Image (tube, rainbow, N blue to C red; front, side):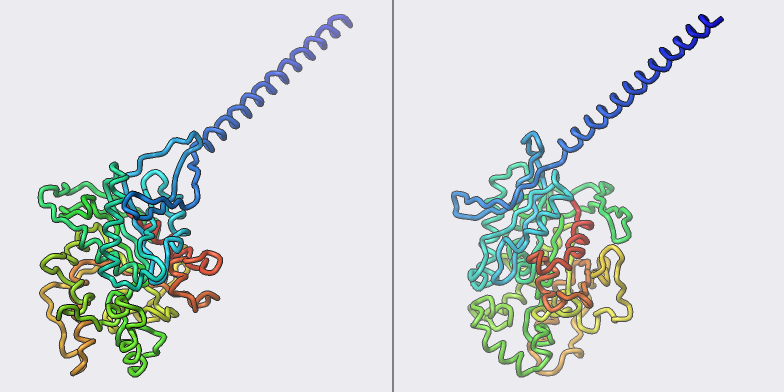
Length: 417
């Protein structure tokens, strides 16, 4: 009996040892599998280099984010995003936003931070800068034959330059209508998916399908009168002195303050609110899938809320109706697409008698709102960076303007690719 017990006990020990070995083997295989998946997962994560500058044979400067995977392979994105800086700015002003955009859509987008108009060259005039930008875009496209779509994002003066450039690049295309029912998706502020129909968008920009046209703190109606430059506090004398001193900012200053009259023509910004004989400014805007105007509701000392949001002063939202978003704490109001009736006449009674500037701005507003715009109002109230709101809305320099990161994220989350 003792021998049997010993043998039985020995057999149990062997069986137990075998089970432990099996469990250890299973654990080892499981750990190996996890490690393999981890390696595979990280191998698929794109590697983002710094902004890279290169010069083409035409002397244009290209600045873009280079995206590569761990194996050194590069995807073939088909959507070109052109970012345009403001007055006395540079391509580096869009460095943060470009990185964030590419991190969200690394395989879909090519981000080109325009460098053709920088520093003092931004004083050469909206038309001259617009021509340069148009040439630069054509040069980029020549080096990217696989590109099929195009979007523009402009900050401050860069929004006006972009509007001029797209008119230069616009070509009507009546034979390439897109079929209805083929929708594009994007996230709205609540995180839900929203479907946009491709309802026969006619016209192309530089031969590409126009998708997003986004401006941020852009003086669409100029900088003269009507408290369009908040730093003047609405004092007519200061606004008048600034208009007379517009030469200090070169031809750009004349364009912004509506004091230009080249060859007896109306101010350039007024021309840009309609379709001219050679440049179809409104048609070019209309060709884009969506148009968005981001505007500082407060604390922007350079560009007023009305001119940057393309609203008449009496159309601005009431403060009690503005609500902060949990996800985007500095975005206080989002207005969906709204189109003014082209048959609606200008309300001349609302313009003070003898106020030529008010009449021009009213005509510009009527022309530009003949197409639909999404409006996003931003308020940096409570932020230590509120006095730098004009730069913070763009996150010009992250260490100084970091509070605008949620505004950039809102722009990215609602971007159509």
